[in-house]
Image 1 (tube, helix red, strand yellow):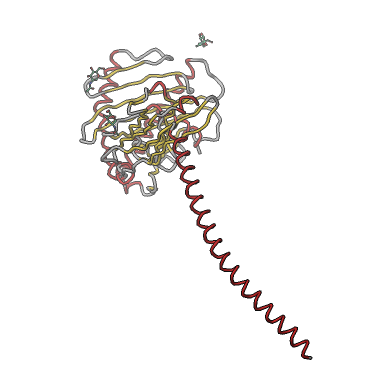
Image 2 (cartoon, helix red, strand yellow):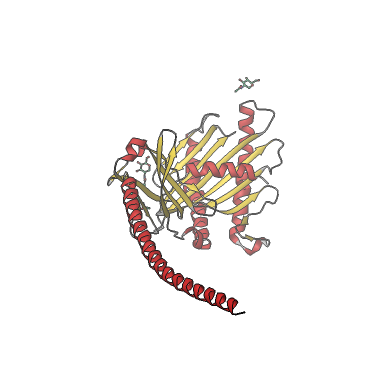
Amino acid sequence: MGKLSVFLFVLSFYTIVNAGSGSHSLWVLATHITGETPFPEFTVVVMLDDVQVGYYDSNDKQIVYRGQHITDKTEDDEAQDGDHVFGDIYQGMKERSFNLKRHINFTEGVQVLQRMAGCEMLDNGEQVMFMIKNIFNGIFEDYAVYYNMTHSTYDAGKIILGWDGMVQAYKRTLCENVYLPICIKSLKSFLKREKNVVMRKVPPRLRLIKKEVSGGFQVSCLAFGFYPRHINLTLLRDGQPVAEQDLTGGEVLPSGDGTYQLRKSLEVSTEELKKRHDYTCTASHLSLDNKLDVSWESGAERVYLSTLSALLVMVLIVIILGIFICVKRRWSNTASQSELTNVDANVSEEMNVSSDSET
Ligand SMILES: *[C@@H]1O[C@H](CO)[C@@H](O)[C@H](O)[C@H]1NC(C)=O
Ligand SMILES: *[C@@H]1O[C@H](CO)[C@@H](O)[C@H](O)[C@H]1NC(C)=O
Ligand SMILES: *[C@@H]1O[C@H](CO)[C@@H](O)[C@H](O)[C@H]1NC(C)=O
């Protein structure tokens, strides 16, 4: 239930959030739907970095953690906190949705309000930021609040008239003293719970691929199977990094198995490919002490091939010579043997003849 909207939201989230590798973040992705759909009115996905750790919806009204369903509510304080927080967000978004809808005269059909709220913390425990952002019907930006521990910025969005100074000050206090501490506390406890997942380090595997495309060739540098998602991948030509604007691709994509992949491709004309160049693909990643690289030399293929064929011809000649010599030897052996046999045959024939003549 709610899978589609959740999926779309999570997808957009990947492109929005790109925290550094030395930090962790917790995000609540909430969706409120007004109107008839097969989905619950309100759904929440909780993401720790890029891993979904919790789910909540308005039908069940209780948080489901990854891999464990808390049935006894008194069992877990966090679950209770979570249910409480999500209940509040539900009410808040319901009202906001109602106001937005009324304001832009949407009386019928399906309206979707999405909210992204979360915080980021460095590995050393230093808090970095808290943020709330709202999108209405996928395109209209509603209000956003950003707080970076010293300053807070507020964007009223493009739909309803913004808050006045007093409401802004109140919301800022709320962010600093309520939302941020709750978010950081949850982030820490999720980190403890999921450390085997979000703190694991899986090194990339690297491939340099040459593919024929219309108008020439594509030399691609592919890194795959790595975690976390932060990676530096560089394509070098003769030791010089190829400028990013000459490359296509370059977006880190989830592979679907909890790891990531990244491809950077360079278009190379057929003439260029015939020239001798050294292409090297280099990756640096949290899981690697040293850089990983793989190289390939263009234009060397023909040289290589001709060397190879010369070698092959030589080997063939040797083999043929060998066979020839062997055959010749065996042939002369068999020849003398068959001469003997012939002699024998002649003898026996003669003997036969003689025996015939005897009878
Ligand atoms: C909504 O409708 C009211 C009255 O029908 C009108 O005054 C107002 O301009 C409309 N607003 C928009 C955004 O179309
Ligand atoms: C927070 O944002 C303000 C204004 O954008 C900036 O001047 C300040 O340096 C930022 N603080 C931190 C800790 O990043
Ligand atoms: C990628 O390069 C940047 C800039 O040189 C560096 O700060 C960062 O740590 C590198 N990231 C990885 C994963 O090696």
